[in-house]
Image (cartoon, rainbow, N blue to C red; front, side):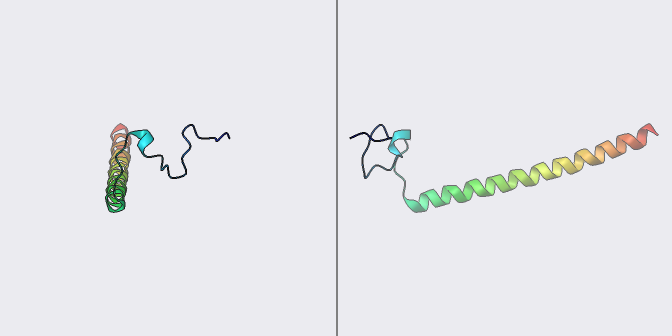
Length: 65
């Protein structure tokens, strides 16, 4: 019988294939939460950089006048 997965096992989670140790669910949730916070912080930093960039361009435009 042929299956679409190379190592077919009905109880196989797929995590061991990536050499990741099996983690408890709360640990996974904690990591997910940390990643979300990190992404949010990164987004805020990008917004501030964009704002500063716009101000600089506006100031450069005024200096040229």
